[in-house]
Length: 69
Image 1 (cartoon, one colour):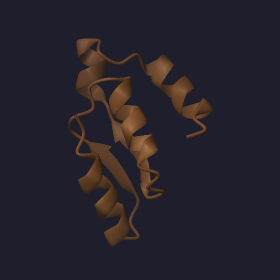
Image 2 (image 1 turned 30 degrees about the vertical axis):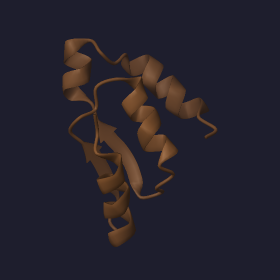
Image 3 (image 1 turned 180 degrees about the vertical axis):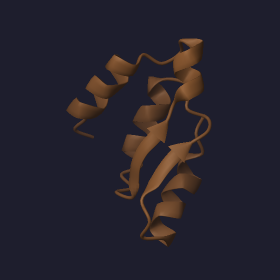
Image 4 (image 1 turned 135 degrees about the vertical axis):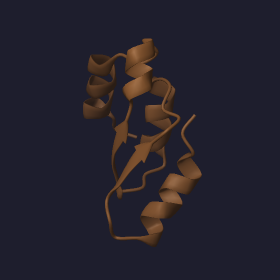
């Protein structure tokens, strides 16, 4: 999975927006990033997960759009 603690720490250490990359495998990984409540995380690269079919883009986008965390 995505290294959420490191990604969140990176956002706390910089004012530069962060795009999580590497380790995104499924919707659970997207939820973990959202649950981190790190406002500096502005997106995630999910290429391999889409290619391998472990993440549905429409489902992930709908989840993010409706996330209330």
